[in-house]
Image (cartoon, rainbow, N blue to C red; front, side, top):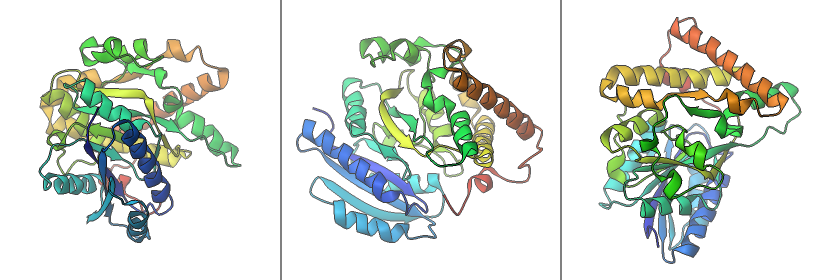
Length: 337
């Protein structure tokens, strides 16, 4: 038996092409959980923020299609911005005056049916957990462009092979459940894996865990550091068997913009929250070249190219050679997906 009630938050900005399929995957995952925990119910909050397409209208159609006794959909709005939408959703939940788990899920992603059940099961088995993250799995590019096919492998190589990225400083206290509650095929890797979660899909134990200030662009950059600082080591776990699928990056420009957002977020975090510096040191990761050497040649080349491009981008950002007059919010803002 796990949580009888939980929330799901989806921030939607111009997602008319993906929102219906995304919600359908959430609905199926909630139904899968309900089969194991009879009577469990879910409130899905769709927060459209600054949309210029038909997303708000589509959200109403989706609500009429899926809402029922155990799966209720609420539609709210906020100013443009992921964190603003998520914060508005958390404030909406706080008005309900309960402490149920909250799952955050990107509106352009799709989850396996077992994800919700896996998240909630972790909170039941491990009271010390405050957050659980999913594994991000790229949907392989299937178009005709050989350039995009190459960039797919290069820019998403870490997601295709999650064992390729490990923590710079191994700290077993951050992974206390690797042996006691093992994930099949990932026991040894989890012990040296990153101590934070990806923002595409993660769950919080309750609304009190959320403390992201509105002036931060990326909740995944801030929140996991904050959790590791406020709570004991081992308060975050990534489930490599809980899969969430996303459209991969297939453009050098999009990769540079994405990397710049993370770069600026980390820089702002260091300046605004120096108390997190020790946690930030444990949060650093590196490529595991010993593991990468075991991969097929095309993937070894992809990792080499990725590493080189990342180093070049870091140099350009550090010396203000590109994007120097733009804020992270500006560079992360767009009208079209």
